[in-house]
Structure formats: structure tokens, C-alpha cells
Length: 555
Image (tube, rainbow, N blue to C red):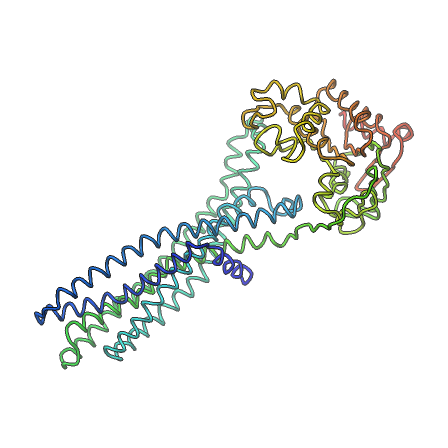
């Protein structure tokens, strides 16, 4: 938990100016609570003695109460604003890291788990500053009560110290236990979220198979575990509350008993006895920190889950630009889980098809080509420059990706193609090359139509994904089964574009279709995670195993 505690400490520093407001109001409020028993005691003595100054003491009581109310109001505002700012910082930090790591992150953490960590857990961790500041402010009344009781009678101080030690032990045990239970509870929440995201992604399949009831049971199967952890937290909180709460009346009885003896002996006044009783309650109010300690425990557990994301190291980039070239792609001694001993040179401007049975490593090879995945061994270079040495701008301008199921980002259709960079003319030219221009123009606002107002088929989404790749991939286009949802006529038109209009760029095309492989300049045949052959389609076609690849795909 040390790393998590360090993150909590950094979160405190990110609470913004409102955390300062919360700190000031908490400290001032603590001192007003500390001053109130003293002023009330003096007011009682003044009224008993019928002194003329009793009115002034009553006015002082009213002023202290007004300040305390104002501190509570501004403190609530400061707590909410500082927690929101800290949570926002944690979310942005986690999101930058997840995006920096890339696809490797989702191989360890399911999507639903990531959403829970960056959503609910970031919010819980963001409450740490408020819990720490407000909880720490409770120390002021406790310390002040010790001083005040010492001024009244040191014997009363010893009684309060004994009670505070007991309360501190209860809070320490509560923090340790609740942090562990909260972590288990948050893990169960993530499990439910992951199952729900999987179910939503497969909603059509579930509806077609008629398995909604079974899927509901699968998603909610975690509820008993979630309930068990929630009950553990409730029992722990209740047990600690009873233990801490039992100390207060015992302390009051002890102090009143001893104070009564001192009053009878003439060593205390009635007002001092009243003040002492109030200071004992105020000092023992450290037990009310139970709520803040519970909040801090949940924040520590949530911070621990955010820290786990940092175990995946983000990709680092160099600063080198690409030299002049035609997009020659080289893979030298590349080995990665699922693909091994790859040595390939793809000449600039060539169209190369990647074929193989399911699981052969086609998508992994495509991911390596544009640095969606970094190999632990070997080097991938573009025009002689290792991809990790390139700046992010150079890499993204040089490589364009299109996927089987493209995710469209941005507000409008134009944003989804251009990603905010290319000029409108480039966006429209890329859309025409991908055969997307006709249906985009039919949309209510054309290229300015918002994505949420533009219902599209799978083939239309693929065409926009292709257009995005064409707009950005100036040297290398990587098409990972990116035409699987297109009709035959559209696919032929795009194949003609790839062969003619885009022949100046290197094209790496993952495909299951024999016609696409036949139209390519060369074919990479993958089998069992290795390159079985690399050559022209007409030569490879003589091998029965190569022909079987397409027969298996057709079946």
C-alpha cells in the first residue's frame, strides 16, 4: 500500500484552491468548537454571580456559533469542489497512461474493469484530500481539550488521555481492516462491470440465441460476493463505532465523578465543571473521525487499484523524423508472444497481402507494422528508422490503420476521418477514395453531421475507417481485414484505388479473400505463428497447404 499512499499524498496536492478553503474553515471551526465550552462556562459563572458582564458573554457565545455555522457551510463547498478537482486529475492521469500504453492495457485489464477504475475508483480516491484535512482538523479540539483540562485540573487530563489512547487504537485497526475489505468490494464491482460490458458488446448475439436469462444470471452472479463484502464493511464500521462510542460516556462519568469531588472540595467552580465536561466530550470527539477514516480507507484501496494500472509501462517515443523514402518496412528478428522469428523486408510502394488460418498471427503482424505493439525482441523499421525512434507526429503521419470494426471518434463525420488534422479537401479526397463520399453527402449535414445523428451500417463504418487511414497514412497503410463488411462492387472499387491511386504507398493488407491476395504484389503466408512463405500469389498457389487456407476461410 505504500505506492497507493504516495498517490493519495499527491492527490492531496491536487485538491486546488478549494482545499485551502476547506483547511482554513476546518481549522477555524475546530478553534471555535474549542473556545465554545470556555465561553459557555464563563457565561454560566457570570449568570450565577449575576454579573453585569453576562450580556457580553452571551454575545460572545452567539458570535462563536455564527462563525462555526459559516465554517461548516464553506467547508462543505470546499470539500465538494476539492474532491471534484482531485478526481478529475486522477481520471486524466489514468486516461493518459492507459492511452499511452495502448492495446497492451486491455490484454491485462478488461474494458469494464478499466472503466470502473477510471470512474468510481478515481472518484473515491479523489475524496482523500477532504477526508485527510477534515479528519486532521479533529486533532485540534482533542489537543486543545488536553490543554484546557490541564489548566482546570491535571487529574482530568489523565482521564481524557486514557480514553484518547483507546480511541486511537480503534481507529488504527479500523483503517487497516476497512482498506482490505474496500479493495475486495471494489474488485467485485469491477467484475460486474466487465461482465456487463461483455454482455452489451454481444447484445445481438444474446438476442439471436435467446440466452438473455442465462446472461443476466452470469452478469449478476457476482452480487452475493459484493453483498458479502458490503456486509463485512458494515459490521466493521458498526463494531468500531460501538467501541469508540462507548468510550465517551465512560469518560464523562469519570470526569464528572472526579470533578464533583473537586467541586465539593471547593477547588472547582460550577462553570469550570461544566467546561471540563464539555472538553471531555469535545476531546473524545476524535471518535467521530470514524467516518473520515472509513472514507480514507476506501480512498487508499481505490488508489491501490489505480496504481496497478501503472504496472504496464507506456510506450516511449523518440524525436527523429522520417527521412525521404517510399515506405520500406523491415522486420528483423522480431519475436513476440504469438509470433516468432520474423525476418521480412517489404519494399516501399508494394501491396502485400497477409494470409493464414485463424490464430496464425495476422493481426499481430499488422499491429507490429505500425507500432500498436512493441516486440520484446527484434526491430521494426520504416525507411531505415526503428519505429520507437520516431516522434509520435512522424509515426502517425506516416502510418494509417483501418480495422474490421473501426471505432469512430470525434463529434462529426469529418472529425472521424480527419481526427482534427487534415484540411477539408484532404478529408473529402480520402472519403472519395474509400467510396464513402456518396453516402456521407446524403446525411442531413453532410460531413458536418454529428456521429450520433448518423446511423451507419457495418460497411459504411468500414468505409469511414478506410477513409481515415487514407487521410493519414502517407507512407504505410495497414488494413486489418478492413473490407470484410463491404459488398463485392465496393470492395472491387477500393481494391482498384489501392492498386492505382495509392500505389505510391506501402500497403499491408490482412485478408481472407483469394482475390485480394491475387491482386497483391506479394503475399505473407503465416502458419502457427511463423512466416511459412513470402512470395507471389501465383507461385504460392501451387502449394496445397496455401490453397487450403482460403478453402478453410470460405467454409
